[in-house]
Length: 202
Image 1 (tube, rainbow, N blue to C red):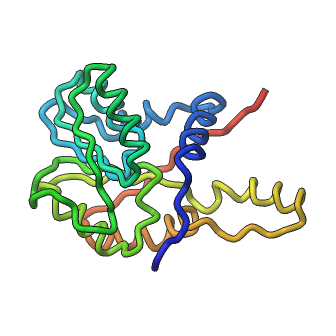
Image 2 (image 1 turned 120 degrees about the horizontal axis):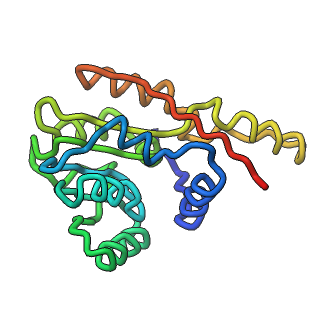
Image 3 (image 1 turned 90 degrees about the vertical axis):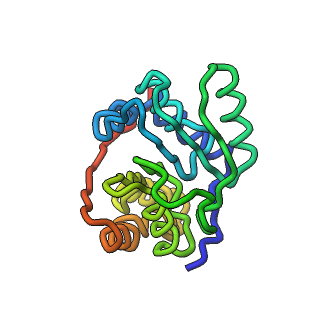
């Protein structure tokens, strides 16, 4: 299924900022507690954007992990590389289109992550097959994204205010079904963990 929608870089960065400012929970702490990245690990972040997850893992491992971030947006990659330089980190940021073969050898990484990005993939079997291919035996895939119920309240508010229905967004409408089932069919073990972050505005 071809996904024509791509979230603009400005909207993505604004959404991240809103959750960090007004959220009741810290997704960074939750992610590190769940994954526990270790020094010496090789980590690939697919759809890394401006590098949020890459820098999180780099800080958690005190620079001891070999981290690669890939994204199709040169604008966001430039932001990531600028921060990489300013902070003295040694993360490798490079172009990566998850609808194309990953430019890595088989069995390269210990952990492959994708936060709120990979659900725009056109061919889920292909994309997650590539993630599986570049992981070492026993390696882990971590994918995060919205569930359909996450946005229902916002849909209802907007529908009431505008009188118009909102079509399902590709991420939230695919994540709980197609994406989870595809991963479950490729990987030996699959777990679903829920992170709840209620927003409170002043």
